[in-house]
Image (cartoon, rainbow, N blue to C red):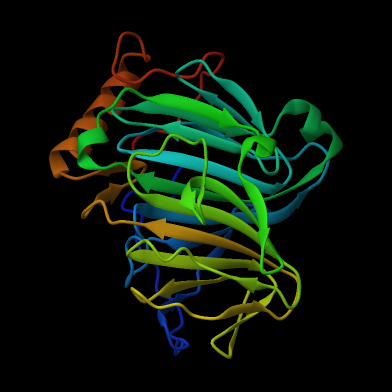
Amino acid sequence: MSSDHPNARPEPTEETTPPSGVELIIRPRRRDLGGFEVARVLPHAKKRMVGPFIFLDEMGPAAFAPGEGIDVRPHPHIGLATVTYLFDGEIRHRDSLGFDQIIRPGDVNWMIAGRGVTHSERTDPSLREAGHRLHGIQSWVALPENAERVRPEFHHHAGDGLPDFETKGARMRVIAGRAFGQTSPVNTFSPMFYVHAEAPAGAEVQLPDDYSERAFYVVDGRLSVNGTTCGAGELLVVETGAAPRIQARTDSRIMLLGGDPVGPRLIWWNFVGSSERLIDEAKTNWSDAAGAGFKGTAFALPPGETEFIPLP
């Protein structure tokens, strides 16, 4: 989805003393976007990135009455890969590469923006008519410098094609990257992991130990982390080399994420880059494309779309 602030400004959160082995606890600020609630987790004032993850939003949970839904108009991205992962509901993705894809719970939409792509995210008319619920996580993964300007691509991966296994009573699904000896089919560009864990009460949740930056976000439930209780809506950034004991006190849903750093990144609106030059070029290209009606320009609109979000 599109960032709602040009500079994706990190938001302050209440300070909490973290348990041993945990560097920082981030509590996102939730916004009501007209009946649709979003929680901004990253970037944060004290933690801009975790591995290559530079942006993390929890969407919902939200209930839409018949006739209502989301309409994120076409907007551009550069320098990142977006991943949409749902627990409930559906989103229809359309992009300037010509892909028109419904994403459902457990599936992965992986869009590599590279040198530039445009996409929209909407509620499909059939679902809008009936009313529905929506809950999920949207994240941006910064591309390493040698891949910032790659040709844009889009890949859809059905949930049943992702590694899915059980360990210590918790069910794990590797969304992207490599973790616990399992590798997702998603085409990543730097060492990273992104895992969906479902942990019934009493189960233990492990973190991969072969990455320098790691964190986990509690979507639902309550956890004991080295004896300290943590709950839904908290991102815990783990200290390098630490192995905190994480146990579910109630049935819990957790997202594990991280990887090796890709270097400092600038983020402005929906653009991510290793230099101001790349960001400024993207600004100019989007303004020029809008002024030219998206004909023969660096950015195009998805087929069938006529609206777009102007440059802030």
